[in-house]
Length: 339
Ligand SMILES: [Zn+2]
Ligand SMILES: [Zn+2]
Image (cartoon, rainbow, N blue to C red; front, side):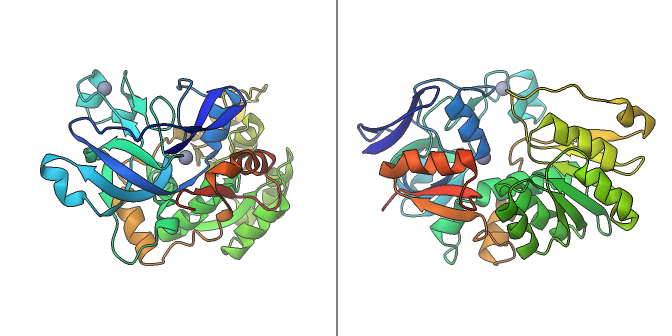
């Protein structure tokens, strides 16, 4: 089978290898689509918190089960998506229901082979069945939508609250929709790439500003009615965190969702104390897969706006390049793995 492999920083190669054998408790999935996440780009550059080379990247995927043993046999022939995290199940964090903090966390697409390939093995416990009407192309956005839903809920965004978002990549655009699903109102979004601002407008965000320091704060000063109760930071840039703590109302909350290990900056954290803010991080999809599947199947969330550039695996260099440069209106490059 064909598989994309990250071998070293900035070294991606298309390889020919054997179809993997599922271990007991695992399924073999014939993959259909995989979208390239910001975290994949960080991993590609070699700046990420947990990864091994060489490995097949990819954790935002959809596919069809072709082999599964025991009780999971009924999954064969079913379209599925799945969680990337494989926790040990027995450490201090796992036993209190916080598997993403597992001391021995394995992640598909980072520490073991992921979905930028024709086939992948995965524990059957990680799989979620898709309903008939949901296309495999849209379904590769179930995982990022679950990430957005999990973040909005960790920040406890409730009906009537005003929310600002920094960063309008795939996650930022999904956050905008997740906020609305919870009854919140996105008053303004900050993003440097014009096409991404347009995508946010198309999804109903009324105001956008560029990503330069002071732009979001300046907007809120001029439009006090847009002052956010919550700012969701999805860009991962420290200066956007600074902007968030300055723009949010006193007593408000700031959600940290994006992160970039290679980025550091001097900050003025006194705003956090003086305004008595709450900072809350969110990572991963939590247990929101089921809801994300329902929302996509019902057409309640628009992922067409995100799936901007389709490629075959052989075109991986272009797919990565356009995503890295955020060029040509790119929000998400994605692979059609059956092309
Ligand atoms: Zn992702
Ligand atoms: Zn554990």
